[in-house]
Length: 296
Image (cartoon, rainbow, N blue to C red; front, side, top):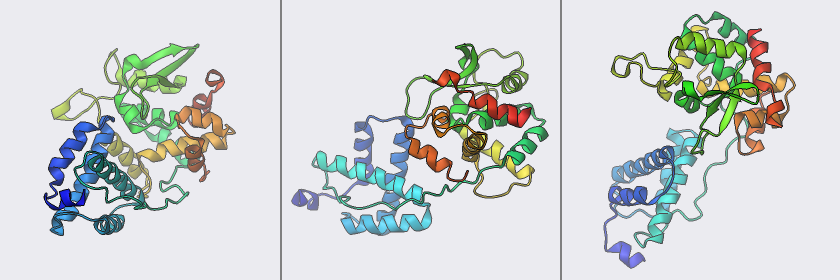
């Protein structure tokens, strides 16, 4: 293998294309892998490294940690490990990432959460219909930003006597999970969408995508803008903070960690436990409980 490698220049961009064509993963995972490989490519190009070795992987890993968060550095390393594993399996290059370790993550969440009082103040102070519908849906269901951006009016359905929003969760191919909508949240959505009866719930206001679906970037910008307007300029407050806030408020109101895990659609309760370190599904009324506490 090493003799084969020594005779060929390491063309990372060509090899990356072969890798991307080979893997069978979601679009978001492909994007993540590409970002990691491109980051490594910039490193070896800046160092004029023709045939990277294990020491180059370690040095790149450590530099990436200085420039990014531990989470991002670990994500990039996972991408590079998958990439070089593919190369070795196909006799294209040997796997120089073997036994290269990632960074230990802290159990303490990196994102701040809102208090119940802060959440109530924001909700009561919102007057823009889109903002109010968006914020109330996020904060009373714990949905991810991507799930909100992809949600459509026709995904709101009655199920087991409850009004539910069906969503495609992370790692799923179908809209096979749901959250329950309280009457207040449903009314906020209805007031916002007006006479529209199909298509994306949240639509873009931009000129180049007028009435098209809102993007995850826009969702982040809207939520960050809301935080800033209410004097919450903490850099650790973000869109994902609404999800963590939902979990912590739920827990504070007496819901079990198992109920919260189910609503958040976590695959492991360990993830739910990390959320809460700061603070039969039909019978689980967590969403209504939170909505009533905030909006009642």
